[in-house]
Length: 236
Image (cartoon, rainbow, N blue to C red; front, side, top):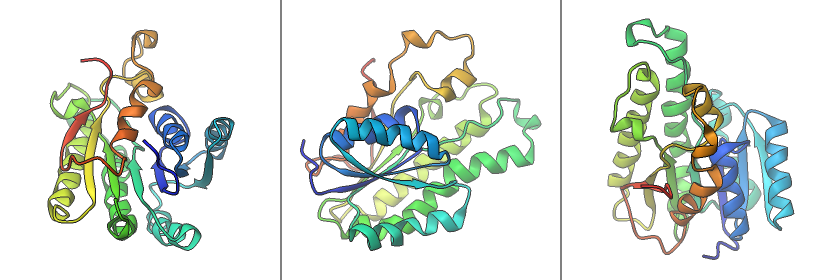
């Protein structure tokens, strides 16, 4: 699947699934705009992309900074004149604790990154994706939405809200060329997973590079699925 000439935005691209997805999109020919809070992490992803023969533009920002998110769309338009693909991957775990014990500041942080940032990305980049010949938007969700788990209340609630937000936008854009889907990677070896399951042997889990091709496939101009939650894990 050739993505040559297309411009893709990937959030949370300094490591894990975001970095692996950015690399996969670049390998397929897209110019990838990668965002994350850490400049060093973005530079590491950029090194991997360049080593694979791809090209990237680094955009360090904090998704809790609403003004920075609002500026992404205009900045991409000014620089490239287009945006074909958006992968909203960045997420915050928050603090694992019983629901009554969640502190307001922790709740606000998880909501800001996992829900509000996605909504602002839609506002900022949605017009560019709708203007594209075959715009594609992918939101990375979690299986925890279907399996509520003790102490994961804040994270699970925000992922459920993200799914509803994305599927509502999909319903609103049903008659356009834009395809909007959610990718469920399942358990993946990552820093977030390591914090949430500290005793787990991550060597037994799929790696980010195992799920990245499935996410990249959803960005293809030939992808016809719309308004779906799609499992991209190589394991059942």
